[in-house]
Length: 326
Image (cartoon, rainbow, N blue to C red):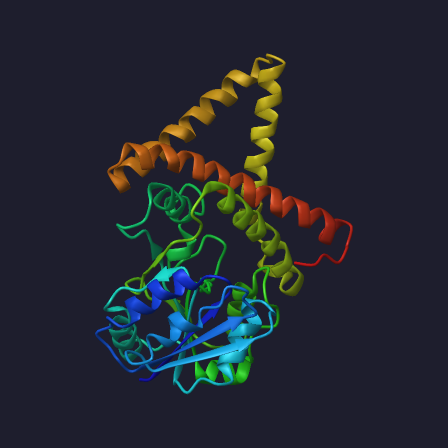
């Protein structure tokens, strides 16, 4: 099988260098790489072109329109039997395409997703953020489980594959951000295509380098969940309200403590239990006290940022029915 690797790029020249380096090490070589420079001010042309002797590489520059439409631009120019989408902040294990090719040969999927993990080279903060995004106590581990808590598994665009046949029938991304990958996954599934997880096809996803950037990203994800529900209302499940409920509970707990209400004692015990649960699980997973402490902070940021973003756009777009730009 011949794969077309599609990478939207926006002002991240160093990231694309690290990603392309990992692609040169692949044990399965039947793939091309399409890098779409989406109106970047920090040009990566010199870095990308330095890999042309090592990869079947195609570099395009276009006006900024967001990652979804940058991928559509690549779909129309790709030659592969299967399109594979990566975020530019990913590192790809050397056996990734060998795993995917073997898996699709044995168990065909029209679209697939893979999990993400923290690489040993990541900073403690990046490892803590990775924990917060994959922990069963925050996201429920839905990004790397075949059975999602909210229903059908939906591949995410940091590690996502689509067959040419699925693309030809479903078309490309309809929205360029605010949950464009989940909307696309739901649409492909609704057309009768088979979607699933390839558990071994992991990538190392850097995400954000500090907690403030992480907060902004997850706040955006909370807003995106509401945006997806405007296309597919039936996909909005009770589980999607959990971060908002958690955030409201934290706010109430702060008020209870300020006014020394008796109920605050019970709330504090529950909060302490949650903190210790996350701390010891993160310590066990990462074998690092520092990462465990940072993981507690990252987990609370993950839940509250998503909750606040979700509540913000739920109120504006569902209750008040306002049109909000991304």
